[in-house]
Structures are given as C-alpha cells and as structure tokens.
Length: 108
Image (cartoon, rainbow, N blue to C red; front, side, top):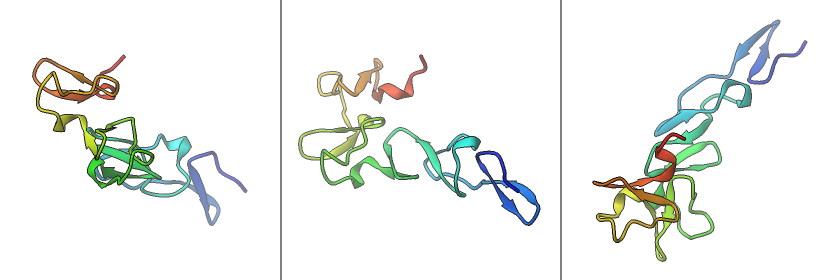
C-alpha cells in the first residue's frame, strides 16, 4: 500500500508525519517527509534544511537566509537587531514606526 503525501505506512495504517518546530512552524502536512520538519521560521531565525536557526548562527552572506535575516556586510542578523529607521536595511526589512522587522512578518 501507499499513503498520501505527508503520511507514511505503519503496518497497514497511514500515519501523519508530525512533531514540532522550535522557533517556527511545521511544514504543511502534504510537504512533510519526516517528523519535526520546519517550513517557516519566526522573526530572527532562518531555515537551515528543515530546522530554524538564529540568524547570527549563519557565518557568511551565501548561507544567510534572506526570508527572515539580512547580511549586514559582516554578519547575518535579524531585522530586529537594527535599532532605528536609518539603519534598518530596507531591501529585506521594513521600519514599522517603532522597530525594524522582517518584511515576511507582514501579511499580504
């Protein structure tokens, strides 16, 4: 037998891949191929494979995940690490009036 995407065969029963995602949200059910697979990360964290890691843990511009982090020229940083409108990098972040936030924090 076989199961729909996001499920695995356990004996004769299809079971959902499940788990949790520290510092983010699990992938949509149909995209999971194992337990504990992150699909999106909270502000200040970037997706590394299927795990959310702090922006500061990425060592270079090539690995800095641009969905929630920004390369400052010397470090991978969370948008929230920029203290004012002038320093908030507008190519990846937006100044909300009181804080520098990841563009992906805002709904369409």
